Image 1 (cartoon, rainbow, N blue to C red):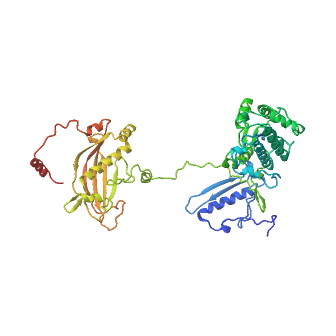
Image 2 (image 1 turned 90 degrees about the vertical axis):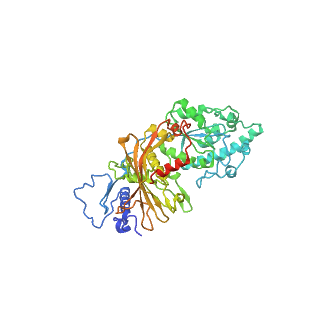
Image 3 (image 1 turned 60 degrees about the vertical axis):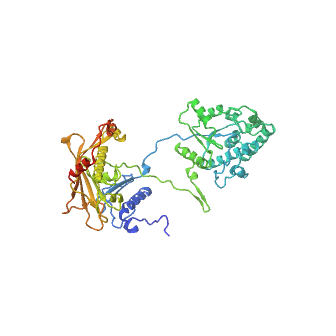
Length: 557
């Protein structure tokens, strides 16, 4: 084993951990960070003589510049700077004041989450009453409420004392003065527990009852600083029990007194019951930058982290206490304190160059506005809405209802299907290019379709096992007026046994034109009224023979 005075310094990362491929830059960054943190530059087998032109003694800053040149041709760089060279802004140390809650704020299992460090746990134990579930009626009894609250407060004091948290002054509310005397020093925790217990018994013998409204009053025996001799006698605690509630005066004195001038108040007790009164007192004194935290809060989840919130606030206020003691983990092997990691300074990214070059097809795919239509399919990726096109793979197994349109022994794609495709295509185009006013009309379905010059040059025969590509192309017809589009529907049957749902590659095969025509979507607030004829009286009967003659005279498609 090497001694600490003769360490083995590993210089090359690659020769020790191997070629890490894409992670090579990360291993180099770790090496640079360790060199900056330790203040040592590890050696390298091929680097023996540093540049004599560098003044290593004069340049006292600690900085590492990391370059990474991958085989792909790009490169990355990173500058690591020693965080110690950044001086902290001077900040006034926090002057702490303890505020002790009186009885009345107790709640079941209020001490279950408070874990005392080994060696400072009290000799006496109220653990069962503090950690087991109890009814509010049970806890409201004076012989329990006062000792339990007073027992919790020295325990919280012990935790803070183990962190080296010291208060400049203390103040108590009602029976909270017992724990306040313990926090100031005149009383021991044992004396505090005995005082609280017998105070509760005296109150019980006197017929006193818990009155929640009176406990909102602020209490103290006197508004002056008391000595240990004054506190450690029965007369003082008799006066504490018999005197009116005074709390504003002592709290005000603790905040405004130049010798005390506490600027960070910590409430010790079952909960943050005094947060309201303390806030009112602080507003009245017009003291700025006074922090308030509570060492315990109601509820198991809040209670478990409240004491650590106090430590966090003290750290932010530059308080003089041991943060390492707060973070100590007690194990059978001893105390293990985690190290504080110093982050690298923030580095602003350069976003002036955009490397994401996205195609129109990719944007169409990521921001699709419409689901695939059964007949029309989906818009061909990358085509503009000024002249869009759609593609669909028609399979009888996917659209079995097309079998119902059978002429003789052949299954024909219905002409109504072509019209439905044209109408859906012009609707999607209108939605994608509409103004805000037209969008409202489209949502309200205040529009109608106009079709003209519809032709079907060639029918589309569908067969089982044969997949057919079908496409629709829209071309604007500005010469006919605003909103008119020419549509053309073409098809191509797949010759192979297994077809692809994507567009076929260019080949010598010819696409068949199945339907053409003009279509327009007319938007108007009154469009819905024109869908139904206003007057149907002009309808009249005709002879069936005339209807048959007209039907036979019409040329077939």
